[in-house]
Structure formats: C-alpha cells, structure tokens
Image 1 (spheres, rainbow, N blue to C red):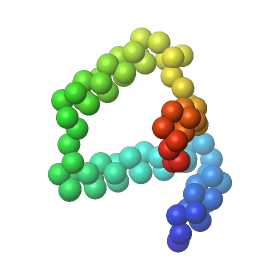
Image 2 (cartoon, one colour):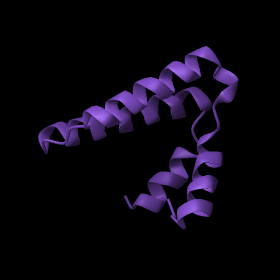
Image 3 (cartoon, rainbow, N blue to C red):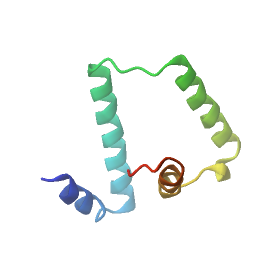
Length: 80
C-alpha cells in the first residue's frame, strides 16, 4: 500500500481509532529510533519537559497539529 493510500484510509477512521493509530505510529517511531541508537540531547529533553509542564499548567495554550504545521511552513518554508 502506498503512503498516499494509507493516509487516505487513515482519514476514514473514527476519531478514537485514528487516535489509536497515531499512538501506534509514535510507538513504531520510538522502536525505529531505539534500534538506530537515536537519543535526545539533555537540552531537548529539558525543552520537552518545560513545554509539557506549561501545557499541564494551561492546556488551552496548546495549538493543533495543523496550526503547528502552518507555523512551521510560514517560518521555515517546510512542507510536512
């Protein structure tokens, strides 16, 4: 199955199934990273902890994935 076909099928999932699928993808990425020896630096870990603490303090401060993608494209010209 092509990546485009997989994306198309994923969009047909119910919200709870899509969430489960997203968790699966995250776990698969973790496994790939672990097998390749990928590790976050201490600075990256600290940044994640800081942002998570900020989110827990004020969940309304979070932005959607689409908004994050839009900001990345605007700031860096990235296409995700």
